[in-house]
Image (cartoon, rainbow, N blue to C red; front, side, top):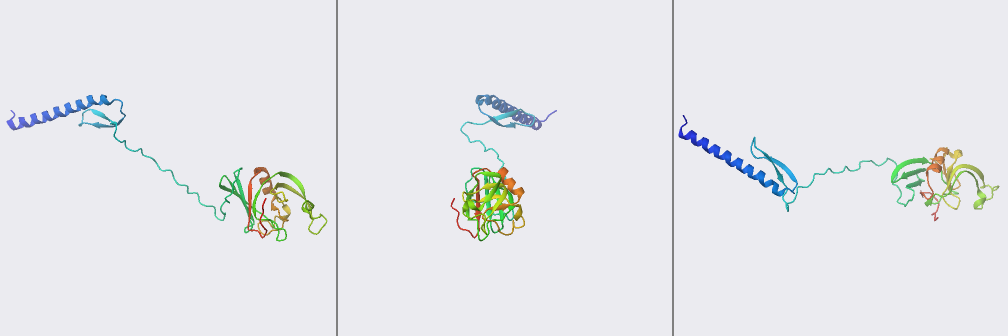
Length: 227
């Protein structure tokens, strides 16, 4: 037999459960009234009770979407490679012939791709500094000093067969294969003004570098090229 105190507690608990159930039912009935809203969360009213979707309420701000930051580029600079010259290019390629290192560096679409040892014009026939642009190419040709006023039979004259020649100026400057100066390439300047490279490197230039590519010459004892 229940005493009055025990009966009162049970009646009170039952009343609270009824109130919660009525509140849950009322909330679940109210949800369709905002059926156009996008549900953003689900909650359980009480353990074992119904789960109700809580919709977005028009006019209230929505939480910002979580975004993952893009990683920063960590590509290191190539040791010993100078900065790419700031010149316009319509081919994507840019070259720097640096007299201090006797090296020509190549970039494609802003990325360093290759370097080659070179020999440029000697102190007597220096290669002028400035921005050249590649012109026509010759698989092979004869270079003749008489084309710029020096007779072939003079002490400084020459008529030489060369391969993989890419013109850089109308004054007769080419970048071309010069197997006879491979030992000087990367060390000293011995040409009559052209950029000498190995046969392999001359072929690469011939096959890959399009007309209009800028080649910057820097650091020679020559004057300023104004092509």
